[in-house]
Length: 475
Image 1 (tube, rainbow, N blue to C red):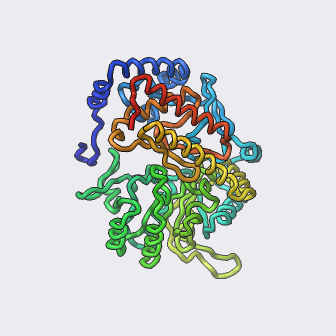
Image 2: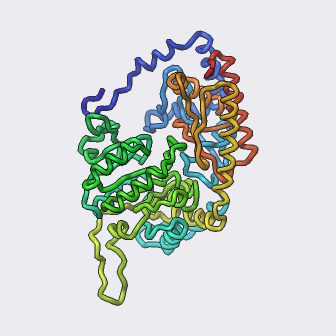
Image 3: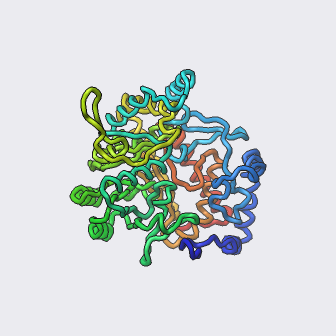
């Protein structure tokens, strides 16, 4: 345990011991799988190996396990279109990572590409503002029902700004978040809470940055009671209404009660809809759950792969960015104290052009794309869940809308996570289905029924092969 942060240190000796639990048959299988995987993705491995000294990249060692070491490297992409991409070895993949969930309308759609090209020809100067900015803000407000919008580059920046706004407007400090939520890399949310208090989850994050943070269990009566107990010092309750790590947990009644509590006690309810916004519905979870948050964070899908995010919400809170509305030709002035809010690349012209194209597409199609992607996801997940039950495989796919994740359960949960599931994903890549190292999966509006067939077959074939290699996959 790191005494400065309360975070367990990585025990590489323990990682090596994983190999001791593998039978000779299983070790032989991993050796053969590694050769096949390396042969298929040889140029990716060479690229990563040659640049490690210069390029510092967290992806390179994500999910490191000694027994799988020779397969721990990212696939290097060369081109993409729709729901597919091609790597530098010439392999084609059905993509179920879709830019960590940021690519909802598919890779490189023509209307978005044309919008970026057109803006590129006009220029992408910074400093002077573009009419485009107002047009994108208007579309966001129209589709989501928020009063006002301000733009950033990333979800982490938008979260940081939203918390600052909440503290400025309420005059209070304490922020509640929930376990299994992800709110980016801002130090102020990188904490975990136990009976001894709240501690940083990362080396380099100090106790001071999270001293006003508390992490609760999402959707529980105990969480509600704790928020109520501290409501006089609560600046904000920050929540992923549908957690990307637990998409099956959707406690609408809990959120409704928290909404009422925060409204009555001048505390901000902040919805982090970086993942869910525009993906589940054009109005996001706010619309689906019929709950109006004070502040909402958008990102990912409304840029469709381009770097953009937004802080949006009620004027009472958003006015803290610019002092509120005022008019020319009279004596009106900005009435509200303002927070520090700045970024050189906020409202970058190319990102704004991309976002406008995306939002126009979503506006013109209603929720057709969301509904179709959701139906494809339902077919994929229910077909595989039925297969898992029939074959007595201790895996279940949890899903909502077009987001899903594979989860192991029961007594096999601990053993499946490190080895069997990892091996299944490597096998899927061999069969042309790609997901990223964190295994949170997404479909897009560009996926087809044929793509779903490929994914289903890849999972089934991978499990059959693993069983033949000595991995039981028994429930």
